[in-house]
Image (cartoon, rainbow, N blue to C red; front, side):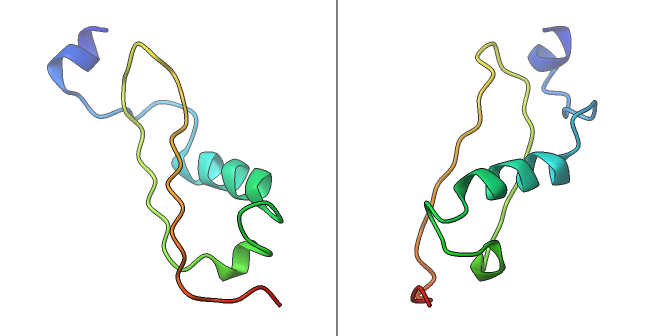
Length: 65
């Protein structure tokens, strides 16, 4: 909590790339056909009293095969 109040970046485990991979795997065939079709990906970790993953999905215009 002290770090969050100071606005410090979240640099402890879990790695951002591992978080992203987990979310992409979970959304495969639900939000997109294959994660190779993802055209933009932004990942950040923040301290918060309410742990969560927030996902915003927008089309980049690639049709499903």
